[in-house]
Length: 366
Ligand code: GDP
Image (cartoon, rainbow, N blue to C red; front, side):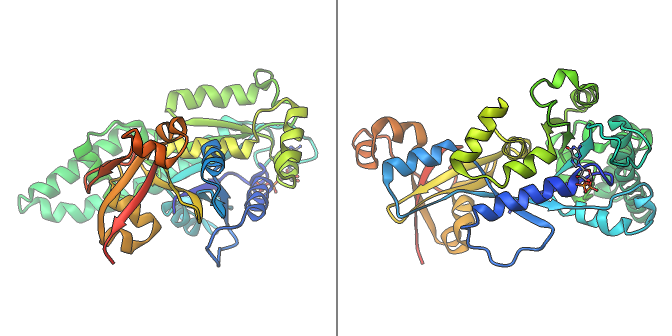
C-alpha cells in the first residue's frame, strides 16, 4: 500500500500529529491487516461517494480505502554523514512514496526550539539539505561505478552518466532537490533507478497555533512556507497538531460538531490525507455488492487487470474482463439494474485504464 513518511526536526509536533493519526486510524480499524509496525499509522480515506453507494446498495458492510503514514522521527542535521541514527532514517525515507515534512509555525516559549527560535524556512532548509547531500553522495558513487563502462563505449552507461551529471549540476550541487528539474518520460525511467530522496513529492505540514487556523494570513511563518512551496511546486497543509490530537478522540457527529464550532470544514488530518492522495496522483475505484461496498486505491493510469490485482493477485492473473459503470451514471440511474437497462454499464478489457469513481465488477478464471 502507498506510504507517506512524516519527517521534521525535533520538537515541531511530529509525535503529537502522528499520535492523532494512529488514534484516528484505530477508531476505524475494520481493515483486514493484522500486524502493523508501531511507526505506521493506517488511516481511512474519507469519501462521500462511499456513503452514497452504501445508501444505494445497502450492503452488509462498507469498507473505506486506506492510506499509510510512517513516522520517521530523528532526522537531524548531519544525518547524511551518518551522524547519530542518520543513515537508518534516510533508508526509511527511501521506502516511502511521498514525504510530509512537519514544520513548526506555532509560538510557545515553553517549548524549546532546536535552533533557538521559530524559523520554518531555516528548518526546511536543514532537512532538505540532508536529503540533497544524501542524493549527492549516492549519485557520485553511481557515476564512479559507471566510469569504467564509459571506456567501452557503452551507450546506456553514457546516457546515464550524463543524466546524473545534469542532476548534479542543475540541482543537487546548488542545494536544490532533484524534483526541481523537469525530466522527459524517457529520462524519468532512468531516474527511478537512482532511488533519489529529493525526487519524492513533498508536503509541508505547517503546525500552526490552534487560533491561527481560522485566519492563516495572520501567521507570518505559514505565509513564508506557502511562498516557498509555490516556488518549489510543493503542497502546504496547515494543521494544529494539538487540535488534531483532540479531534482524533472524537467520532462521527461529535467530530463534525466540534469542527463546526471551530469554524472549520474538515480536520487537518483529512486535509492531509486528501493532499497526499492528490500529490501521489491516486485514484479510487469501488466494488459494490450486497456483501460489501468497498473503496480501493490505485495509481493514475492503472489498467483493469492491475486494479483487480489490488483486491487479490488471482483476480489479476485470471482477469477476463470488467463490468464498469461510472459513479455518476450509477447514482443518476438509481440502481445497478437501471444503469444496465440504460446501457451505462460497459464491458472493458485488459487495456482499460481505470478512472476515478469507477464501480467495477471483475470476471476472472480461477
Ligand atoms: P516532535 O519532537 O516533533 O515529535 O514534537 P512533539 O510532538 O513531541 O511536540 C513537542 C512539544 O511541542 C510537546 O510538548 C507538544 O505538546 C508541543 N506541541 C506540539 N504541537 C503543538 C502545537 O500545535 N502548539 C503548541 N503550543 N504546542 C505544541
